[in-house]
Length: 526
Image (cartoon, rainbow, N blue to C red):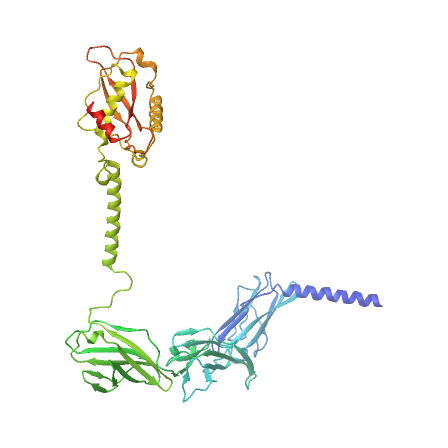
């Protein structure tokens, strides 16, 4: 007996599972339909295969057995491509309030009945939103930095209204609570929704005389939304300002000093000039103080006139004092007869001056480099050592054994300057050994002869040119050894018509400086 009951239960579960599986195959489009009263609404059920029959249940209406050729119920025509195409639907030409709720369709397919459901929402216009202030101010006004609370209520709408907040045209997002939706029913048992949302923030000076707006957005409103608003009145002491600077006042005429301040309520003002106090609406000598002029939104223009403005007046300090029941604020004012306030940062003049200064510095650096390279100005050698170099060179060369046939040319009127290079400019003071070593390396690289015994194998030329490869440093008196400079001797062919050697040799001579200036002079005399 238990086995039979188990088998029946298993069969029931399988059949129920199959029915649910078939029921999931029904596609209802759309899943939710929102329509106002009197507007049309369409629902379509699709099975994906041929349908034998179609039954649709609409809240507040009788059951509809629909087919493409079915015309018995006016106001509910068939919607779809036909039962053969697996589609069955209905269009409600004029939606009524009682049609709100689930719309079900039942389709007969291959001996089974499958179903689907859609949600028909008949929109009902909610009441105008109500804005309530929960924080009570003093005499209908709020003080700065005090906490402010309010809430907005949208009653009896379907679907629920969407609430948004504004300060004039500025959206408010901070300080809002989560909307609370309350469901209720009317006398016809229709479902209605009420939405409540609160706001909590601190009052700011910028809130003064601005409109706090609660906006209910709903599908059924003719314009799509309705507003509820309250103007906020904020009371605060005169707000501080940085140093006020006024330019363009004309000397000799009446100078008008204007300062715009913010305060609520209207402030009482007075001016203090060089120990004198001028109350608003009064005159003191050449000074006259006017009543504050209301510019709206808590702004007031406070003016002081100075008859026959003098240059001394522009050097004085002016103090404006404004006060109301919430506090007192002092404002420092400076005036000037210049045309306009100086621009912030560097002007065109300073920028041009900086550019010119940089160019001058670059030119000076360039001149210094050129002067050092060419030996001009402070870099020229005025020690008088060069004339002695020639005579010393000649005496030393005449004493050298390999040069007994050498007849030196008279010293040139103007010394030949070496080719300039960066190395010659910045590496002047080389030792004689270094100079000689570099000359030997250069001669070897060019394939020329070195100063060896080749001079004995070729006849010598009768003329030589002395080229000094580096500057000569004057010997110091305390040096024990004489300074030596190596000179390169370039030999020219002799005038007797002898054939020049295949390789013109180059000889090097040592120029020995004497230890003192006196010995140098003796050498020149000899």
